[in-house]
Length: 228
Image (cartoon, rainbow, N blue to C red; front, side, top):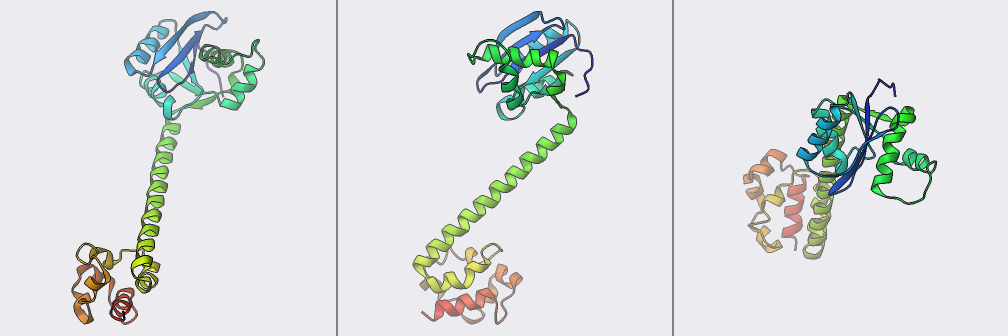
């Protein structure tokens, strides 16, 4: 990434309930090293203290999920934000003495990498925020599609046990609005569907919108029920 001049580089090793932050000056002097609770006011207080030394760059090892709060607070405070991918961080950490993996050591590696190896960082800006929002929406859409598929499979399983002919008739239409589902509360069993013969199906508002032609799924379902 193109590197402006920063007076402080703060590396944050993010965690679920708390983080660890290490801030370094351009010459490598440690300005702070502290536990940082997952709390907006504490994160804001740290960033304001570091801003007294000059321009600040915050670098995290995970910008999503548990790392979303530090990123959001830093953006609101007008602080530049960057991201050090995990694989790059592990390779850089191998260059430092010691093999222990602690939050303090990881935070120092992140901050020192930002100071000495700025090309390894990925910038997080407003455009990334838009992309992240789209990613969340796409995730919601995938969850809804998965839930729909689960419910359809459950309905098909129940119908197969209760009335296989009805399941064969209407389940190809399960991913579309099916009027038979509107009748499920009042028709608790196949016998409850038998009175709905002939033009009785046409009086169902949902069915009238879908159409009950000679070959429509609902009319076929009605024939299947009455044939039992």
